[in-house]
Image (cartoon, rainbow over all chains, first blue to last red):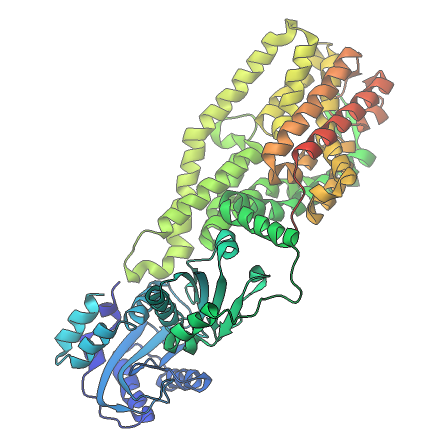
Length: 150
Length: 469
């Protein structure tokens, strides 16, 4: 399994429309829902927001990683969106989020391979050059190429 | 500086690893060594060892979840939210540079305490074989105790000595109690093997381990008169565990992943273990038994002392396994030919392992864990009625120290009995046969048992190390 198995082309949006954290979360949940990975969209959204309440997933460096683990998720998915102007995510470093990775993980794991992939992604996101390339990517193909290099 | 870190977050999906990455990078930048343990949803990875903790200048814990700090007693520990690990790893490390970090622990622990802890951890960390074995043994002990005590009770009260051994009349209530005890004994080896395998391969290992253990314990699978006993069970458990673990590591398509742990791994592992036992290990075990029987027959003319040494060693070596069975059957056969002195020696050798180990646990409690001390008391009861298996819980925990000790004890006991012409005309062992008046030269029978017990207890307490708990 590779990250590109979890994050397919239709889960990438280089021009997010929403202007608030809530709007963008809605937008990206719909992207994941459209792939048929969710049995209950609202329940997944609830998981996301309750995680957000425990502490913002805006980890700084212009990145947010809203994530939810829920029974409503059938198969693990990662959606990726770019908001070039940035959106306020209550980030730890006070900066707006520009790169948003939304992660959906099933409650009961049929294996932990997807967790390993997310682990690699998390580590990779700490790399300044990698983040810059993602932000500057101008096609979905380029994003897929970048993440498949991990 | 040598630093260690632990990162953890509520979901264990992303922050844990981001903080780990940032801490590692920051340490490298500032010119320090660091190792980061991650506690995420996958489980603990890159685990810190006791040596590393001892050698470290300090530990950084960035976690939004409770992290067990007991292993850091007496070390400098800096705790911070996982966010700090991601956003200001350098500041965290700089706190260590300035020495501004408290030492963890209510009171500063004494030197010996922390060294003992480290030793204990080292033992657990360095020897997974031992840990897996322990897991199997601790699940097995109740089965040995329940089975052994019920059998002991029913034989002691309801048994009648016959030429086939102690027999309980079919229509007696004690027969049912004996059967219940026997049922518990039936589970002994499968449980041992199953939980060894489970310790190695998690849940998918249980079924192959138990099935393998059952096959190991039942010689009929491979044309042998006796099963491979608890030693066979240990082998089956490790085989099943490592096979299951191996299969687990094979990459499979996502679609069959969900059925791996419940269907594919147990099924394939069980079949492989069964095949190995029946076709590869089984034949040698059966052949070994035949060879040993023939060898013992040929020994009849040899010196009595040599014979007693051999029989004593065989009886104690595997406590109910093939060696024990061969020696016992040889002794039983010799009763029929009028050589009751052979069974006399065996009757002593049969009971000294549980009696001697029971004595050992009473004499030096420091060398036995709580569980072992309890098993020791049960062993005493089983020893009185000649159930050698009573020694298994203590032997299986520490085979390389305990088995030689009980072999020496049984050998000495058997030799004493042989030299003083102790006889036994019922194929059974332990003090109970004297109660049934099957023994000739009763005083020396008991003297031989006592000597065997003392030798066993003395040897094992010299060899065993104090438990570190």
